[in-house]
Length: 454
Image (cartoon, rainbow, N blue to C red; front, side, top):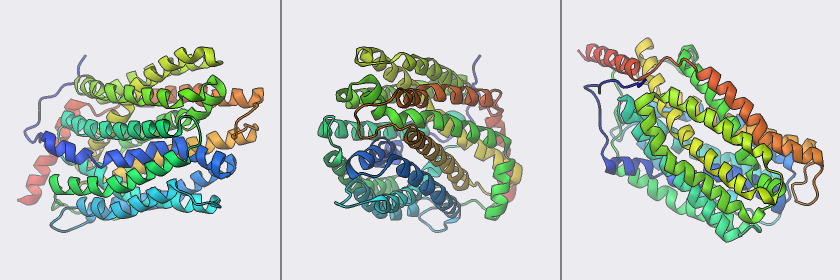
């Protein structure tokens, strides 16, 4: 059974040059995004000397505080007037602060402690949110078509994976399984140089759709409308749960490889394999999503991930490195669906909001809530992982581990994610917006916009 609808008359095909320019900022953003949670907590715990439990608490508090800035940035980018567009000014003006904070968080001076980590983690989060929220909303507005939106999202997320792979590769080569300080300093310098450059190219080459003539409700009413959007509630809840399921193994990857697998020398190669598999699979998942439906294919991918993570229960020592390599490939293949399909579905639920409320598109607000959900998932996974490991006496400095500590590591890495993904799969069953329904929604929106302009 396929999920194919005829292309809407309003379909906008985005040129490869514009797709490339639009996706370009995702490379430096991603180079510090996911790798920050992979390397920075471990680095600040092992080499700077901050306790694992305190790091987890800081990450959780920063993310909660950061949520308010996401809502403000999303709302303001929806309402930004001017001939340069709504999204461009944010992407361009936030890039210098993002570059500075990226460098500072990765180059802590001697004597840096918890306050330094908390301050620069917060500034990284705020400044990069001021880029990513308008950028993601911008992408959702480049085309109104169900399948073309998958293409736009795929370009951005493939660039994201390239940024992560580059960052992981850099850290792996420079650190070579040893201290992370020099490698993270180079990563921070890369992000600081390339972020303003990539954002400038994007702003120069990509069109920014103007404000419509429709009214826009207050932030309070907008949040009420978002909460009343049932497909959005279901999508974002499933996304958070699946995000926690992905965030736990991402946060604990280095510890699992060093303490459970017992092969710290393979950390970089295994992590690179994981993201390379995600990069290769992303276009395939995008094609499947356009043919069979984004929600259906996403559920397939989560089922696949559950089967792969079940294999990780059998990893007990260095002799299982081939098995873990297979796990990295398999889970990386599932990653391709997680990075492409949910974000493309998000654009569709924004259309439903416009149709039901008659308000101007609140893409920025919706993607702000999406960002809050993403950060909540990362914060919960990082906070829970380090918090629980701290409670069970896990030795973050390496060395002897108790059975309780190792068993807790395994449970957090693979068993709990399986349960969470099964919950997300159940929540997405029967999702109401497929290609046919989205085409109907867009057709009605265009009629309504035509009436409002008449």
